[in-house]
Every structure is written in C-alpha cells, then in structure tokens.
Image (tube, helix red, strand yellow):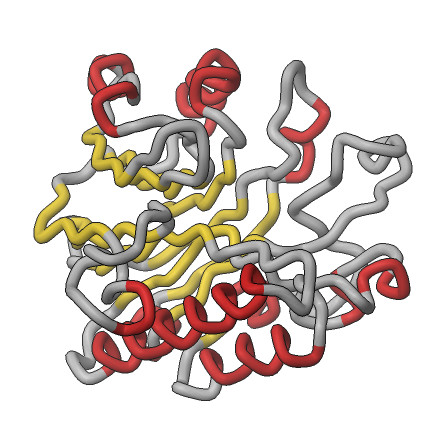
Length: 266
C-alpha cells in the first residue's frame, strides 16, 4: 500500500496539477492538507471519476483535510477530541485539521491525516493552541496504540524536528516550528512508541518537504522538512520505504509542499 501526504495549499488552485500527479503517480491513498474548502465545495465527483473514494473535513477558506483512496474506507472520524479537551470529534474546535479512516486493503490500516497548527507568533494564543493540539494528538495516538493495530499519523506537522531538517536552521530558532518546546512535544509523540518513517530510512541532512514562495527559496533549495509519517509499531513492521517527491515543487503552479510517501507491505 503506497500512501502519500500532500499539503495541496488550496484544492481549487491546484486541482489540475493534483489530477495530473494522481494519474501519473497512482498512490493508493493520499492525505491532503489545506484543501481550503467546505465539504460540499470539494470536487469529490471529479476524483471519483478517476478512481478515488473521497472523505473530507473542510472549512471555508482555511485549513481542511481530506482522504483520497483507491481502496474502500470504513469508520471515518472527523476531528480530535474537542478544543481544550471537551466534547467529542472536534465538536468544540472550529478548525478543520484532522480526519481518520480505516483503509481496507490486504491488511486494514488506520490512516490519520492531520494539519497541525503553525503556532506563530510565539509566544501567543496561537502558540498555546498549537501545544494543546499536540497534546490532544498524543492522547489520540495513545488510544490507538492500545488497540495494537497498524496505524499511520501523517500530514503537515509544522514541526522541524532537528536542525538538519532545515537548510538554514539559524533562521528558524525563534520560530514556532523549531522552538525547543515544539520539538519536545514532537518527541513526546514519538516516545509513545511511534516511528518517524523518513528517519527510519534516511539519516542524511538536506532533505526537505517545503520551500516558501518567497526569496527564491525553491531555486536556492532553502527548504525545511515538516511533513511526516509517524507509524505505530505494527505499521512500522510493514514499512518498506519512505521518500520525498521533491521534483513536484518545480512544476507549474505548485504547492509550497511536496508529497511525502510511505510504502507498506499491506
């Protein structure tokens, strides 16, 4: 099962490029972030026509996540437990940032797609929200781990885990994506027993998944790695490969992110 996470930065702006990429790359499952569309405005029929089941958790003009799958999806859940830990299924959280479903392949895999808050400026209420959101994500991961089944938490984490994940780490030292408290929250996720797929396969620096539109960042390869796949132990046992499809950033009307892939024996 080949799974890609891809922050598309606006489905309406990228639909042509996304369609071309889907036909060319043929992922089994794609987790999209920043669809920037309400559910009823998402072009689901268009993707149905090219062979994908679609589930969305959308929001007008901002955020929004989606799952596109060539395999059947079951038990779809939208949202984490509510803002500040109250409510269920994100009922108290107006920001559409999380979606889950079970992909019914040869081996069922629980897929959790997420768009973690940016958190800037820090300190601020936005940064506090980022850390609370990460706590809620960790709580959900702990629940899923108790089931002892394969699951993947993938998406745009807005976290630069280590200095080698940025071309210019000094430029990010005061940014919410790289603050020690942000990195510590990410490590707390991993400490539950999750595996960061890319670093399980590749240790070298110089690998990025995001290049800003400003200051010729793409041309200068001034990137950061913020799109991640975290695997449960059962999913990690199935991991065959993980890679970043960097060349997509050089295409016409690109997102500022590129797809990050995992290949599971499932």
